[in-house]
Image (cartoon, rainbow, N blue to C red; front, side, top):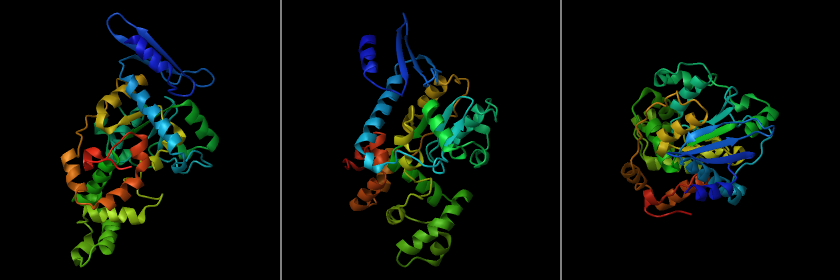
Length: 327
């Protein structure tokens, strides 16, 4: 087993300047990954981790492969850093984290506050969400010069968490346009009313005034007709929030395995004493299927084209939702 893994790892380029060592222990298998910067300084040391390390290697290798195949669809260079405002910077731990709305970003921002030394690790989940979502709470890659950003990308450990594009889109719709909460009213008044006005025949005065009963099909049609790079962050493709083919993240965590992936990354940066808040995963497959069954096939196909890079880069399929694969 050890020899097979050694051969597999030796054939992979995990990160630029990465050294991989596999040690055999008597009772447990121990894996040490030691990525290094050009000057030989270790970026991160992974010790006593099990072979689920391979999952992260496979995700990264797949992303790099897809970046080459779909090179014409993504950005691979930047002249300024203004678009990198979703990439948070922790210079102390030499970390970059790209937060993605609707992918546990509130809890990851809480953890990031602890890493920065701006909050206690004793009860991470108690940090108020309105504080972690303030734009001034964290240093962002967009706050730095192009030269500094390039240095951080080259030398820091970088991670992002992703989610099935259609599941994330549905979560955003339900949270911002369907839920009867105070926070949702902003989206309903600003976007919901506009959707009702342009996509509903014989809309009632109440719907036109409140925008709180937008259907999922109306929302989908709005996205198709109004898709621009300035999409709202809650449903903007991850490929246009985090630029994975430009930044080449070292760790790609997934919402579907959120808890174990979060624990793995915290252990990888020697911060396993920080406990990632327990999260109850939402949107079961049955529920997702029910919503997408309300959409005509041509609408689904056009939605897929908006999120095609997210599907391809992060190994997601439409088969479990639609019963067939698109693309």
